[in-house]
Amino acid sequence: MALKSCTYVAAHLRLARARDVHELIPHFLAPIKDDNGRDYSIHFVAVFSKQPNAIQLILLHGWPGSLIECLPMLDKLRKA
Image (cartoon, rainbow, N blue to C red; front, side, top):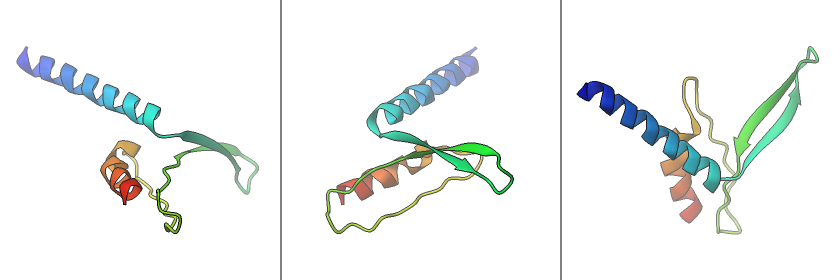
């Protein structure tokens, strides 16, 4: 019973964190067409530095994975 409760709470905390991410960071979809004419949508977020001369970076995560893995780094880069 305790293990089931812990799993339930952990799942809901992850969901709450994902909602926070969705609300705090602007999300975008870009349409992409491959060489065979198939259409895809690429999901990305944009986080901007307060520094006018900041270098642009692209951070990618693998599968399985999520944007949540990059949050600590995104926060530090935005504040730098």
